Length: 231
Image (cartoon, helix red, strand yellow):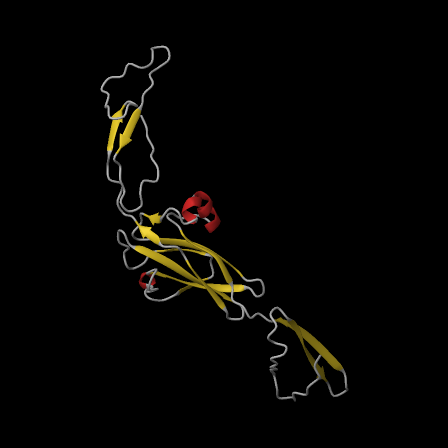
């Protein structure tokens, strides 16, 4: 509780500082303004303010190998990759897609600033050395600098809240793999080491059962993730 203070007729603003009161996180204070006319009639207006001493907290920054709706969807599709076991890799050399999730329990997040570049030095060459501003929680961006094969980059995001605090979170490295796997061998038949030229399995009534086996496919950068086959 404060004593009423006369601020005079010329004043249109006033400030008050108190280390004992204003350093309490989440505390809510009420500011009252009372005006009195020449007849002694009083009008009082109140406004509340909440103390926010902490920045937003980042929960995830995900660089997507392909555009998706949310970071949760990307982790659901590539759960192992998001857990850090498989490398994040994209084929595109001309586009960056990322999304993120930050929370602030007190004041609202007003905007984000983000940059992309070297994961070790933090040199944000892919965004011209600067942080770019957005109010969205995702971006798709075509850098002026072309990404190169085997290059790794990270996306750094800052979430700014209503009082000016910001929290920072950086993604895991995303690797650029612009080359397909090295071709191996595919042989007809299920017997390893044998390439069949003729197939006697099956019958006119039941159809023919075909098989194949393959080996020696290799991808030095990101490994073989899966195989698909067709007849």
